[in-house]
Image 1: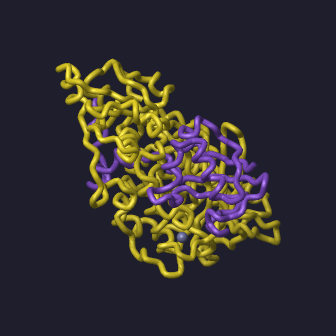
Image 2 (image 1 turned 90 degrees about the horizontal axis):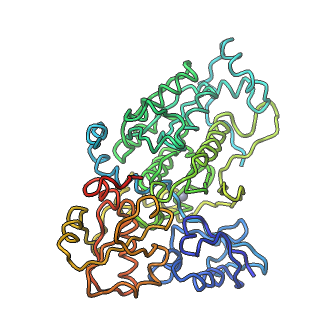
Image 3 (image 1 turned 90 degrees about the vertical axis):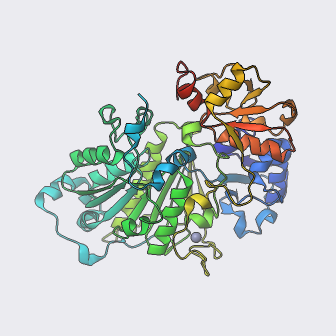
Length: 115
Length: 399
Ligand SMILES: [Zn+2]
């Protein structure tokens, strides 16, 4: 069984689990087994065509599978598979800031805030 | 990876006796020494964002004697920042963050030059701001600025000391295209908005940015001093080509290897990005052409429909602990993480309104339902429960 490390950002879609053990001899089989176990995580890992999403990286041990044949990368029997998604620290901040960012230097917020 | 100092010898000045006293504990380290401290004095470091990561970065870099510290932020200090952004204090609320940060930094070290940019870093100012600096420390909180900082640093040949945080988890690396991979080599494109909840929605342990930001500060100092060390000292290793993962709850560090992607659109062999682009478009913050927009409803409109007794399903997609902070009366709870598998619980014949904290994750829930084949009318509560608290029910706390 391979040990899969689930990052915080995806745990809500895997019943809150930080780590699970699933079978599989390749990175692709391990990730597919994870998606089988937790269907809600599927769309966060695969795109509509079933390809791995580009903001989720998969590592076997400490190596990125992109350098080892992608989803075909071999996973040793007691290997560790780590999912590493992009985390930014705060997307909503950017979204709320967007209109202000477009008008250059920003000074209006304090004035516009309700008291 | 060992790298020589990024500060050229011809910029080094001598240290005064006062500086020798102040930086004595650095001078005693053979890996820093007088040479390294002179490099710190000559160094120009740009800290992008003076929030959770930027706070410890700016404080420690100022204390370390970085000669010129640039601070970029467009934001103002808010009460909810103070749980982690320790460069700001209670009396700084409503002040521009760069002004508050500059005051604090100067009180730690009046000898350094502090340059503030009270603006958002954007495609039309990033190159001219970053150009003046030796190294950039990325303490931003959003994807568009991360890609912007990365691309600008690659185009200008500057190292980008990266850190990011979410809840209990942090990442750190040094992206330096001259020596190793860049941010796009690791993440060619960002997640769609709403997929990964932000810190504003998902929360963050207050000390986490303190830990990750100080890791970034260490990496900045090593790039400046030269991780190879002076005087034959044992070489230090930069985080170039390595991604450090930190989990504060499990208290575990893990390390992964990063390699340059030869097909990288900005640092690869045949780069397609040769100038800065529109990063909000790139990160999907503007609707892509042909994308079906999500229909929204304002808090006031929702209130009017509920008062009129319109048949409506109100679905709260927040996590249970979050609903407990500010419960939405009369809503049905289906957490985002279970949306796809519980799609059948939503009646396609009745309008359904989805809500979350700020109206982003709910949009994502609507897209997930559509993908799962749901054909009913799905509305997004614009700006989420925050808008309801602001415009309809002021007894509800804003969080
Ligand atoms: Zn690259």
